[in-house]
Image 1 (tube, rainbow, N blue to C red):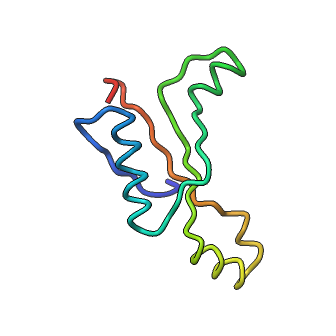
Image 2 (image 1 turned 90 degrees about the vertical axis):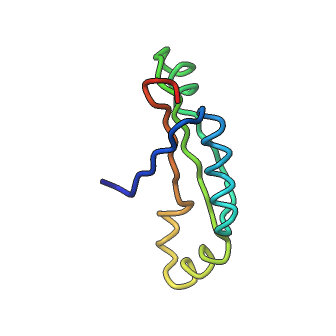
Image 3 (image 1 turned 60 degrees about the vertical axis):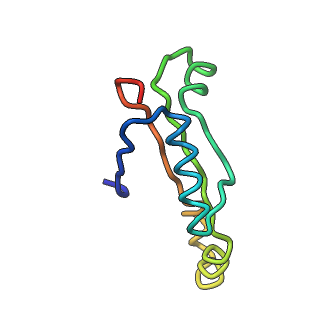
Length: 90
């Protein structure tokens, strides 16, 4: 396991995405990047895939403190948050 998992039941993908972004913002994180793997797989290799997004989130104060302490920590930035659609579309 590379992190921790939370399941958001009873909502569609876009609702879960909005809730996740709001939760990150409440903790001082902004979303710098969004990669939609399902769209990339379809475009690049012609494969269908469930909705799956990778958000690159960053808290500037924490990032500054981290790279000031150890510049190599930049390899781990931004912090990735993933969202994936369940088999039932939720």
